[in-house]
Image (cartoon, rainbow, N blue to C red):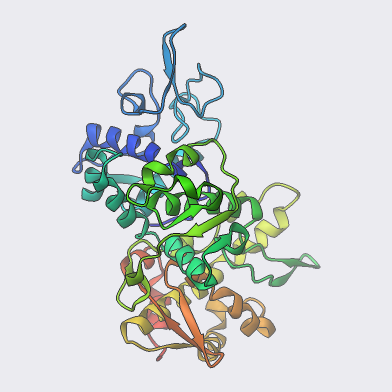
Length: 393
């Protein structure tokens, strides 16, 4: 199950490498484990034994994570925090594990985790080696959101782009619904702060892989070892350069045969609505949670049909899709009079899920990649899939 990455530490692939070395040492590829098993534990083998980025304070005889303000913090590691000290309530380690799954380095089924063969190879390869660059490239190209970002960059049609030109969030359809006598706007799209964190991570991965490079640092680029030449910038606590130069977008991705291995699954086609608690958002949270299954259903339908169109070398008609949804209002429709307008926005779920498309004749959506349908369909209701199978392209 692939999630939307929305925190910063996993942007540093070198840190992920250290964590995978710990996981490989403790569990290899045949033992399942849980997120709490990789949190920092000062009383057991931990990531510090595998990390080359620790700061050493010789006067007090300690080594500590450079991303922790307090050298004596028992939280230990910015990727995971500690078993006895975690002010983020496992959000950090959860996001890190989600990142490793997105990259194909871990398999995650619910709370059960296991290192993949690729993750094992990643852990056993020297980070500074030429072999590591190929592993990084292959890994980032597994994640649906990463594929969507590469397509956006390619679609800009220019050598230099600004980070503001890239979108990484859930679509925002701005549908309204009556609730306790008031018309409220459903919160189905990503917020700006989440987008900023997500974008920072994806751009860092693309830089590490050598697909793009910060324009102000272009003189430091080593095309043969971008994961090394970019490391000083990537390892900074914050990265705020906005201009990037396109170095090389792999040609094979959008040629008609590429399959995105880690798209979002059904449950992750919407953001964490339960987190809408601040700024008196209880009412918005309640109405959004009420209609969340319809949002997930229609976003799933877009991806499901686009993948079928890709497999059949066909296209998806947006108008026909809307007509089909209107016939199944209980599954898909929230604000009926705005359905077509809503779906013009909702089809952008494909872009961040790893199945970008081109539009012809203002209606025909032609997918440029396929997606791993098994990953997409995780947690999808069987009755939904049965209904979707009634639709003919």
